[in-house]
Image (cartoon, rainbow, N blue to C red):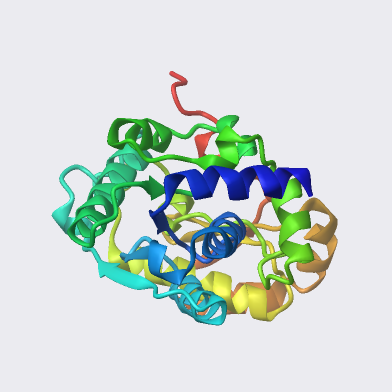
Length: 266
């Protein structure tokens, strides 16, 4: 596989790397290849655990890292300690990424790791992603993006490696479920996390619950909308059990970054 040989060579040139790890498709694949290229002692996977992250995803990240034989370091962070973050402005992602990676950089340097990697891929450049500016400012390197790895390519190579994330749905922090300008709080993000977990248990693997006050706007892929509508009572009960007053099914279906669509509009 030519793409993977290029990535292995790129990593070997670095010699020793810290890696932002979430347990998603991209970072799990990158961690697997980095361990092969450099060995366990030269790879430091870092997971920042904050209220923005699903408890389910944190548990899965620990599980995947353990299966790969990596020494995952978990770094706690409280969003209330990050100036400007809870106000949820349009550049929230920049503020958040800057804080997350500054924390990881501090830990990495304390352990003797001067190079920090993340799993941004070549497909990530299209959406509204102010967080990429923070990565550039902090000198974080994104080999998958740099070498032209698309999400489809990463899934294919992950499957070839037998990684459990090969078909895992895309991840995004819980703040992406809350409209810009709406204050972030731990209770709202808990409700979102719980509601999505319940809907996944009903068989909707790719799902987003967008919080609009007491209304849960549910996004599932378009081909699953008829099923979700047919199971309306079951779906509504699942989200109301998590503290929402109402459940609404979005007829446009699941869209990555749907709350970014009107950023910058007057």
